Length: 429
Image 1 (cartoon, rainbow, N blue to C red):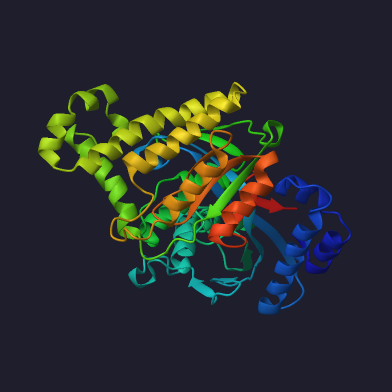
Image 2 (image 1 turned 120 degrees about the vertical axis):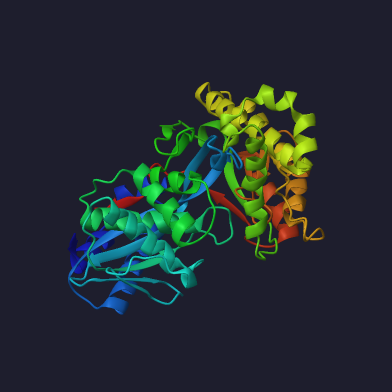
């Protein structure tokens, strides 16, 4: 850590520019806006917690799911990456037994470190995520002490970029930097975040969101063992292939969709249970195909059968996408992305909620992408689905037209052009 004054002067004088250009995959022309964000978060910290003292700066990115839609919770394979939208923080120890985290536009979360039990009344609140992450550090033998942190975020809410996972990873990265000497690996921090979300926040989720945010870059992840997932980085230079990554906000109604999300792994597990297994990854696809008639007769759930079929094909497809990128076959990669989108639409059925059949903004957005891009680009439902966003890979020579036509229907600033960043949870020193 260094003093607030020295840190701010260093940012203003450009001493952090190279680090920021690396972190956000940007050039000289854009680095100023990122530097200003860190000045802003320091000013926010001082306003809330007082001036003077030393300070540390942290960042954790939102994530984009590139391949493997709803495969992680069945111990499958995914392809994901950290993006150049993130939640950032200024933080420092406060010499007490109290953790205080103030996020802009939200009330301060205050946790006493002698109270790390689950609070059911705090399910679905950020304070639960903080408490859960702290609990995992303590359970792993680290002495977490009181600290103050101020955070701001430009990760789009409800965008499928997983702002909650970014927040979990940020909290883990802060604690790792302040109290664990950076000893906890990004993979472990991701697991801590998933634990907090599943147990303390009471939201079922796989591990992909946290892993992509914590590790960063583009990563292929095999969750066959969730205790020891196999994570490998993948070279993915979109500029080299003349394409941009777009995340399109469909403007869908963000009513409570927890039951819709929870039904996806529940359906898949119902099929796995037919074979005496807990997860579909443990089931052989050929055995599944040979038993479809018997499965239908036993479980009376055709949707579960279709979702299982999606899993088997999508799990193979995610691995094929990695190979296509490593073989520098971008056209094959795009075809696989389009196939992924079709499978999510037809088999996984997560593009709209059956309880709200007239609200099909994601379906409409996919249709627009198909009409504009044809086979020149690729597009698919992004993340959990049902509401939220669509991901598209758009050729540079179509980008202006694509953004204009999409926003003429969905509204201004609904098509976001992003880039992949090279690292995940990060302390900026």
